[in-house]
Length: 284
Figure 1 (tube, one colour):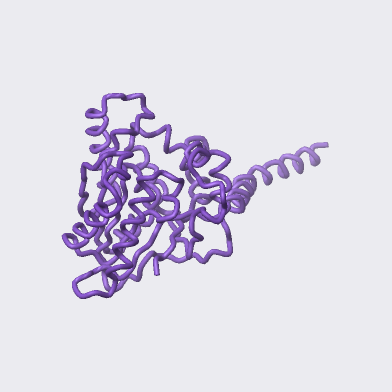
Figure 2: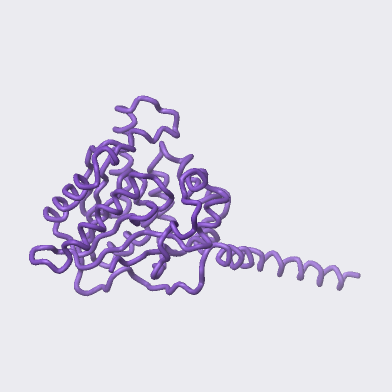
């Protein structure tokens, strides 16, 4: 009887030790398309690059925070642009748009510091109003930023959906993409590469079940959905710092829970092995 008890306890202990790794394997299988190539870095380490990241809202950078921290650690220069101050993001219940804009600008500054950005360029175009600014004007804004900063690499949203369907996201991605494609290779135009943050099919499928933003805005026609990633970048070692970047956006916690569901309920060492990569499409 005593021997049976020892064996039973040993089996239970073994199962308990294995269970987190079973969860990790299950999570990875649910979250990642394993036919998409993985690579260690977004760009080659030599020569060192100046990377310009263009997003419309404070907190959009969370989607590529791990990649940006990895680039910075490898010696690349990170320049970040936020086109609006996020005054329409009222999920925290703050209705005063002037106050909210200041809070979110401060949060964006803190997030940029956590990432290690060399400079943050905060603009003041209307949140949820970039359609009124217009694509042509946005392209002029982007072209002026590129001329001023002279980056080697561009990062933004895709031009088809804007990750989950927000018009500001889509227009920003479209403006950056069109400026890049219209000018690449011309004398005086610095960027030689552009990458767009995207998701794999399994992530989109899960997001449509869990995220209210995706459920409300994502195209019903699969052919109109996000572009397929060309590759993913391994970012597991930077995941704890990515959580810090998320937490810096204190007014947006309700929204960011859609981005990484249950991250506050699962141990970080497990969660980081599931959410261990960020997906990109290269614009060619």
